[in-house]
Image (cartoon, rainbow, N blue to C red):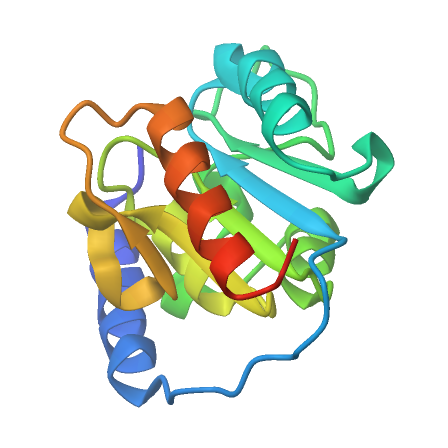
Length: 170
């Protein structure tokens, strides 16, 4: 688990970044590259299948990053990140996270179902043009916010498709 001091340092930096966050202008291009942020490894295939059914995204243009608790038994993988990959003041330690955050995605979808400081930091630091997620997490992070008490991925995808169609993004 994250040490209390490290957690407070990350929270303080997160609060500063959210306060400084300015309204950005969005590109008028179609959504092609998509980033997905999850907190449950078991949902990867479900979410990817749901995206394939609802959106015209190519599988190779979808990147998935999953948060999981740190365990010495787990092998490091570019698909996962843990609390060990973030340092004090929300600094990114792993090259995997740095690449994910700096990549110019057209859309970032955060499917996390519980408030998690680390996934929120990654969402905030991401260079994605549009960001979407559940309203109950932290709606200051997103351009498109969907309110669903059940945190259902299908509902998020359905609403996201509706709004992206209205905005001529898909």
